[in-house]
Length: 237
Length: 313
Image (cartoon, rainbow over the protein chains, first blue to last red):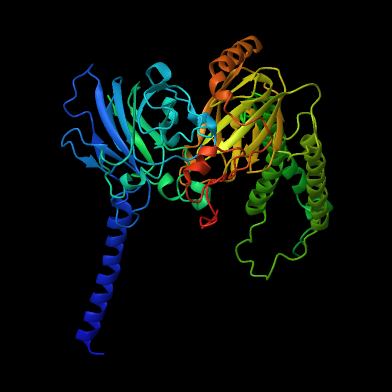
């Protein structure tokens, strides 16, 4: 092989290795972290923060379109953002409105059917929820009413909110959400609750419905992946 | 006529008493080391003395450290002495050190000493596993060692990624914090609802695997009040590192007050918990809502997933 050919071969091999490394870093490492949705920008101290989220049976990721997933409405743009990392001001009342577009699953541990950490220890439910519609709820029996679709549980705050699942009937089926972010014409329930943020810190949250399609008995896939059913509350002073 | 060189005296031929020197150096180093380990370092060795199992483990570690120190110092002393005293002198180009008078005695001493230490530790460890406080580890569903009296029963339930605690003697209530009374023997029943976890109450000196479908029993008796931390000690998924929670050992009166208060506060959710059992099926729920069937949810039924979703990928 001539010298120019050898140099060219070496250059191509070098480019392949470097390109592969850059792809891995960008696609799997940098790309794996969802964006932080900021509720602190422009926030007036002492005023509550209103946060709107939705839980969808599908998502907008091309690689995993059938993973259940959270979306949050950006306070800056009003658009739905596929993220589970939410930045909140410390020592502030957070008013949450959650649209749940998924049907129910039984809780593996019924303890997570109890509402904790919210103001008053309750949540209010409306929409197409079985037996819970229009009620202020402190405990949901996911075996009796099949009333829980997902939970928003922040162990560090003692916050646990079981979102009421949609009452699934044949008549509702045509209105099921098949494209994320879901829209209000899709069948859904609405859960409202409020809580106070503590001091600054990062607080992990997760869902306690094993909704990861049975991989590692339910908690694989979406359940353990940031941006889907696991996330952080970044509370800043 | 030149004088004949005098023959070396028997004492000079035997040389200095190396064994005595080494023993003296070893003793001078070992005695303070043992005292420091036992009295200064020992009380701070893990896992502390919050419970009788923790104190027993700390005692074991102290004993082993005290035994290990003279052995280590003996090796180092011998090594250092040999380097200093038995170096090859300048100009000595012989192959090897030649005969080593007394080497057999050194070897016998070493073998006997280490054999005594190892066999002693075997007997000591076997005794400590059983008495006086048990091992603090899970003994399986049929424990070999049991404490006397009527222990407080607490079920530890692992679930990705949280431990919860059921108190069958307090109406079967389930909490997210581990609260114990001081001076009361506790019987932990450790299980899991999904994958393998390990219940590690560090300050109590208790570590027991939490396996789905298995009741793993461990005992301890808290000796001091204070805060404690529970961590999962078995890699159980992506968020394994976040699987921890706090707890406390309270005075008996404060514990009873807490238990009564908590039982009342949790009454509503306790009613919907499954009846207390030593294990729970991770994938099947008895009497799951008729609604589930009526709704015709695919792949569900009385289990979490249908056959199209295997338990493992």
